[in-house]
Amino acid sequence: MLWTFGKGKERISFGRHPEANVLVVVRGRDQLREYHFPDASALHVFQSDMEAFLRKTGWTLLEFHPERRKRDRDRRRVPRLKDRRRFWVDATAVEEIDQPADSEAKAGSKG
Image (cartoon, rainbow, N blue to C red; front, side):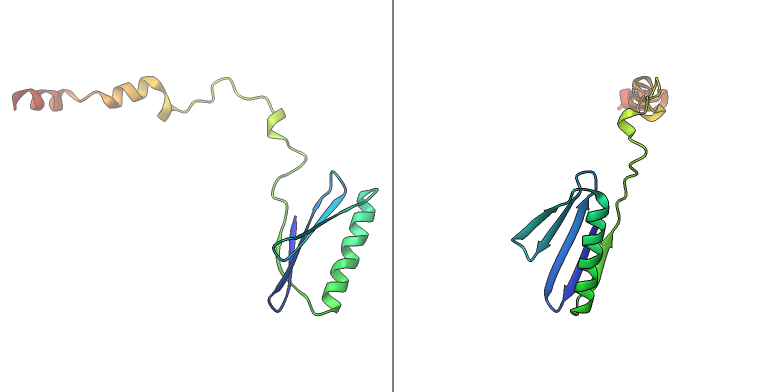
C-alpha cells in the first residue's frame, strides 16, 4: 500500500511491508528512510500517529494505492490444468489458417 501526502509543492509518500514490519518513507526524490518495528501493531500505531501529525500540520492526502494482490491466494501454489493451451494458439489450428483455401490456390496458379 502507498500513501502520498502533499503540502504546497512538497510530497511525502510512505508504504508498508507488513510481512517484514517495515514502513518506508520517501520525501522528495532522494530522501528515503525505513522504520523497522517489532510487530505489525507497532507499525500501525506509528503510521496512524504519522498520518495524524501530517494532517494537523497542513498536509493533505493526495493519493492512496491499496494492495491489489490477495495474500490468501498465491497463484504459484495452485495446481495448473493439464492443457492450458487455447484453441486459437493450437498448432493444428494455425496450420489450417496458414494454408490457402482451394479457390485461392486455383486463382493463384492461373495468373
